[in-house]
Length: 261
Ligand code: IPE
Ligand code: IPE
Ligand code: MG
Image (cartoon, rainbow, N blue to C red; front, side, top):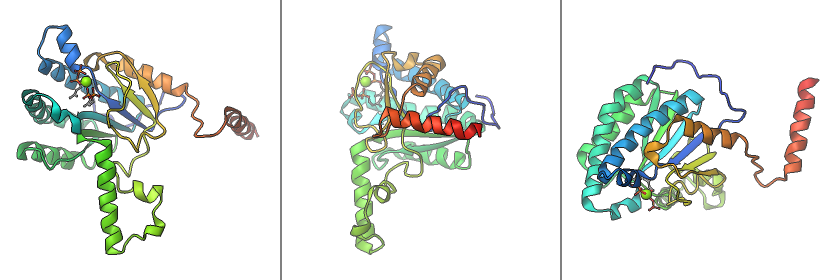
């Protein structure tokens, strides 16, 4: 990963402010090669490294990836333990490069059940990269969208109890301040690899108006070109947010007329 000091010129007309990815398909990738599932997870970490580079190069400022869901504890104990070890070793391996590349790392999800070793490595990675601003990289681990919403509700209620929030003032923006990633823009582009068309309890609130991009490519095979394809597809979407297509076209025309003036 090279040290990038300047944001590159974007080749896209519209770039998502925030991209979220469900990195799915590691197990099937390994199975196709008659390899153990762990080999797929290892290859998946390699794919993530390249996608971080591609996102940075394209000018994406915020990337959130799903590494382990709250439901993934239902997997065989051995696979879970391999994944936990892989998190620790991958952070150790890539932290210097990420730091150098200007990536600010944050981990979202319930950490209370992680081993001391993993918890320490997450804290260390966050504190080592906290002053970086080139790319916000959020890694969701033991994360669930419902968990996020319930935690937010609990914390908001504590503020109601202490009197700093009045129930009459609770509205969407106030509530969303309690969620993970409250300081970041909503997810514009949601990508899921591996062929499934589901959200699997990822960022439920934050994806309320995301464009959803599904591809059959298995995560370890998802490369820079595939990522650019998703960005290209995103830039061709008309995001209406409840309005009509005609309204948007009129707006565009009047903007263009004002530019000419
Ligand atoms: C995603 O790949 C990685 C994690 C859930 C940790 P999978 O392991 O779900 O791969 P498939 O879906 O079995 O192919
Ligand atoms: C979602 O993938 C979680 C991650 C990619 C980490 P899964 O493969 O676990 O999702 P489901 O259970 O098949 O929906
Ligand atoms: Mg899967």
